[in-house]
Length: 68
Image (cartoon, rainbow, N blue to C red; front, side):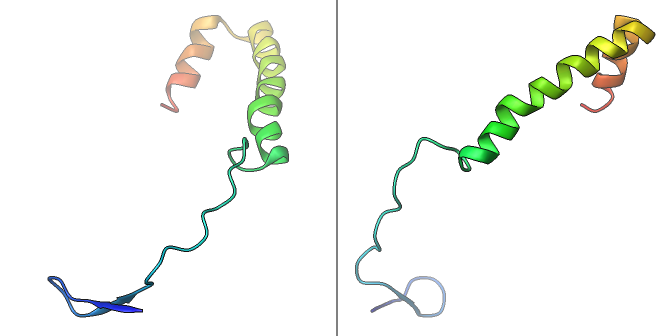
């Protein structure tokens, strides 16, 4: 450990960086990515199709826009 003094009190930092984390293609993990990026549209598209049967496109737009 090295002692580093800068503008604040002394802090200890490791002398060498730790092992780098293993690189992966997933953002979170395989199941969470599947739910977020595949499951969400599969859930929302039928919901909007059902909503169009009851409300106009402008009403749906105003509802969605209200959430930012």
